Length: 452
Ligand SMILES: [Ca+2]
Ligand SMILES: [Ca+2]
Image (tube, rainbow, N blue to C red; front, side, top):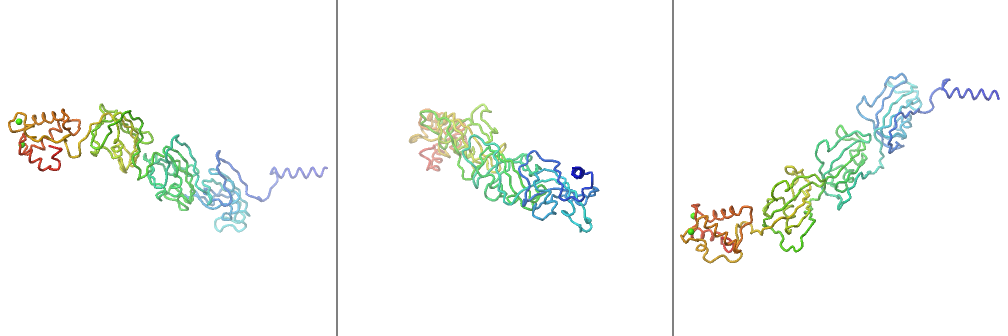
């Protein structure tokens, strides 16, 4: 009994450190900081990236990655590190910090390292883990927010505009579009991006937010790039898709409201008045006709508005409302315009207010039937052999009023008539003679039946 008690007491004393424990048998690990979130622990065969300080028992430093200004990257647990490190780094999370005490037989043994580590040295390491990945890792995609409506998702060769924050696994930012105050604009799936992002943007919706975690073999590999992305770094991209389109896209037309009994619709050369709101696909408001007193006016097909808007305004009835999605190649192109970012997809809400039937391109007036036989005599209202501007104007207005012809529609018909007069008054003396009218008619022979 007594002898047994003594033996127990002795072993207890040993465990409490009251006697010299002798050399360590294994590496001592103190996990002095463990992050709350630990998605993954370093395992044998993983590639890891870390910083460390190495000191002796007296605190004297023998090595430090900080002094070299570069993290250390390598494979853990396969004998490329000293055994003490291979064991001491196992199970670490990213951002975890450990103190390691490595006994000589798990370090550099009884030989040491000439000029650096003496024989039988116990080594003390302070380590922070920054990166963990494995060559078998795939891309990880997590949807952070998805819009309710998603008619279409990104495919190869689409052109995408997105914002992103790029961070390393330990949270260090390496790049951000937000800091540049401009979206990142690029084709997807055609090699312009790192492989991980070419894959990671597939299937994304407009307005979606996703996180893409890219292992280095799908990013910048062992060498890294610049001074922000170290070799063998895993990259996290938090992306927000602003818009995308394909260079083959036509303008998208959605009819929101079409009045009943719609017989007359807009055609090329028609003069129309319309209201519009123009925004980006993320809802950013750009322009609105409601900011002005009057609706917008335009002659369709006269190259006064962007192509996508022009074609989206064709075939509309008065009172009809549409939503138009205009890709940049039918809008303001790669360079954008004042207030419109380059390569932006535009959303228009349009409402047709009025429509005046147009005249063919190059014409100011057309006859609805055959023009009068004796045109000059008809125009010369007071029969004095010449036609000054007011006589001409009166004649034209009468023809229009009687439905015999129509002017090119415009917000300023007087100017159209003045232009017509100017065309006929060849010598610019303020009156048209019979000879001038004939000359003009001969020149425009192909138009003679339609225009004066
Ligand atoms: Ca006259
Ligand atoms: Ca004249």
